[in-house]
Image (cartoon, rainbow over all chains, first blue to last red; front, side, top):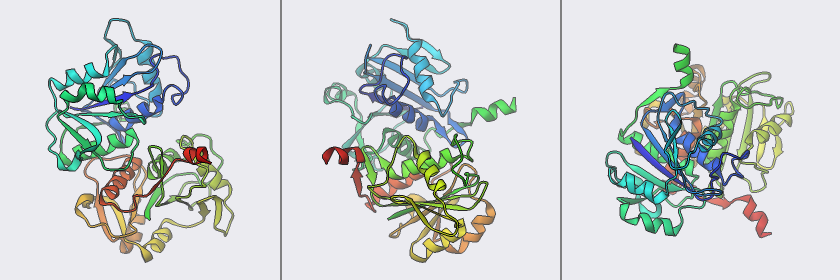
Length: 206
Length: 206
């Protein structure tokens, strides 16, 4: 599996929103999920995507999406998937809101701590080593922020869990572009490159 | 300048459309333009983006977008920019529909032929050489198709203008993802990496 952890500074922690942009830039989250999972006519089979929302009214919320053929994806409306996950949140529980989509209360630091027990953790940082110059170990976890980045306090708190800081260069890419670049790098290395043809095609074959 | 040429098989050649997806997958064109020009809080300064639309009712149409601070971009609605360009088309003329946005009748082959007179042309093709293993010459032109690729007939017609065929690997990426990957490669090589802070920030500084 390829793991991503996206830190959303102000992403709303309720399903009551209409506009993704105004909901603490959940558009950035949706686009990152899109480019994390989808390719042309295909859904990547080995993605484990963690989102930590830190906006009002009830942070933090941890949405986890794991590649699953049964997830009712709408590529053009990933906001609805996020909204449903948030609606289905139940206090004190880990809920499977949709096939492959889970929600619970969990902080960014706790998410990273748990992943670091099993996997190597790579934090995106402009001062890190170049992505194409490091060795990527199996089951890599890539940690990145939204347009505001990851707050210094949080970065300090996860410091001991980081295997390596990595850089994609000096250009400030969209979070979704960072994910595309990382996915391509792993594809070129032949790590977890499986994908399924799109659900439409699955449906047609039934 | 970095040049892109995107071949759209069925992209509508009229501004009369509501849904980009139903307008011959102009959503693919819009997303490719988005990732061609935009980075986080920035607009790339050295992009020359050519789109050739081959859908009904009046193909072919050539829309050219050149990096320009005055272009009234709406990142969330690049469809409107395409629509305005198509509305402003005038038979037998090259029209500047918006600052930095041009439209005229011109075929894919003619667009490539003209670019090839001045610049090296790289055609995306799964059987090509790996992007990270070729030398990129100044002013590169990258040629790619939408979800249906470039028809064989068109590929044959541009054959003599191609400097090199290049591959991004075995995964069928979105056109927009191909553009992100190419932009990142050029960024890493330090070719045409200039960008402007977003227009919002320009406005605020006035």
